[in-house]
Length: 373
Image (cartoon, rainbow, N blue to C red; front, side, top):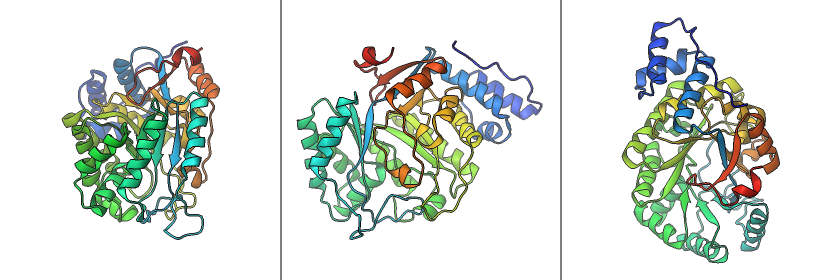
C-alpha cells in the first residue's frame, strides 16, 4: 500500500515550527529557515516535510531509475585528490586507457541487459588530446546510434579548457558536435572553495565547476548535480552547496536531478568514519526542501545499500538512480553493492511504488512495458 508519513505535531521549538510551517506550504526556504530545519528539526519532521514536497512534485506512486553502466575510460589522473581511491599517477603500474574493443564489449553487454545509456568518465589524463575524446564520441554515436552518452564532468571540461587553451564553451560545443548528449555532475564534492583547497587543491574551484555547468546549460546541454559529503566540510558548507546549486538552477533550469552521497574513506588519504544512515537521510531531506527548482532527487544505493536507499524514498527521493551495471570508483574505496533489475523492482515495489525505467531527462523509456511488472 502507498504510504505517506503523517505530519509531526511534536516539535516544541517555535523556530522549528515556523520553518516547518513554511516548508509545508511549499514556500521557498531562505538560508535561516534551512539552517533551522537541518540543524534542529527532528529526523521525523524532516522526513514528513521532504516526503510532502516530493509528492507535490511527483504525486503518482512511481520511482524511476535509468539503465546504464559506468565506464571509466582511464584511471590516470594528475589531480591527486585526497578523497579518491581510484586514480593512479601517469606511468604507474596498473594505469590504463581503455581500448575500443573493451568499450564495445561493455556497451554490447549493457544493451543486452536492457540498458540505454553509458556514463563515461576518467581522470585528468595529461597525455590524451581533445581529438581523442571527440573521436571516441563519434565512434560511439555512429556504432550505437540509440545509445545515450552521458559523459565527462565539469572538472574534466575545465582541465581540457586550460590544457588546450580553449574557452569552456568551445570545448563543450566540440564534444556536443562529436556526440555528447548530457553532462554528469561529478567532481562537485562540496561547492566551497575552502573545502576544495583541502581535499582537491589541483581540481577546478567551486566557481569554475558552476561556470562549466552554466556554460553547458546555455548551450542546451542537460546535466545533473551531485554532492559528496562527510569528509572535510562542515554541515554549514553542505547548505552552501545546496544554495549554490539552487541559485544556478534559477538562472538556467538545466539540472535534471540532484544526487547526494556520503564519502567512503577506504583506501583514501582522508581518515574518517563513514557517516551513518540518519546523517545521509537528513541531508537527503533538506536537499528536497531547499532545491525546490530541481525536479528529481536520487537515492544512493551504491554507497548506502538497498535498505537505506529504500527508506530514502520517504525522505524526499523519487529516483533510485541507476541500474549501475558497472561501477569502479566507489568500489575502489571498499564499498561494493550490486543490484539487478529484478532486485531494484522488488525494493521499489515493496516500498509501495511502481518502478519505471527512464532516460537521462526523465522521460519514460519505451522499454518500460517489458520490465515494470
